[in-house]
Amino acid sequence: MGPHYCLLRLNFPRSVVSLSNPAPILAGPMLVVAVIGLVVNLVVVFVLREHDHDDLNTRAAFLHVLGDALSSVGVLPPGWSSCSPAGCG
Image (cartoon, one colour):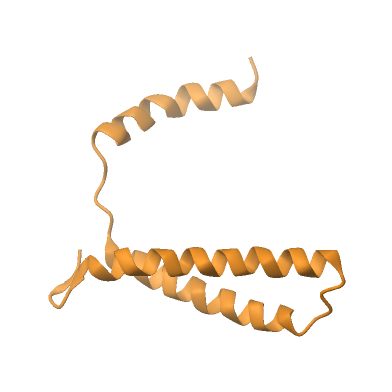
């Protein structure tokens, strides 16, 4: 058996327990990380936007970072709605 089988065998029982008893998500730290990730991705998008898009690698990097930025935007509304004036839980 290969190393992948060993990893699966070790992690599968914990995965089943996590699915049946999920840990609470801390909205505050998730929101902070999402905002930091969004800012960094937007800076990289603006840097790559200035470069030549005829280069396939530059174009792929631009689209990849743009997708990361959009996923960060997708995290913000659920994280923000989990926060109340009393604090994020």
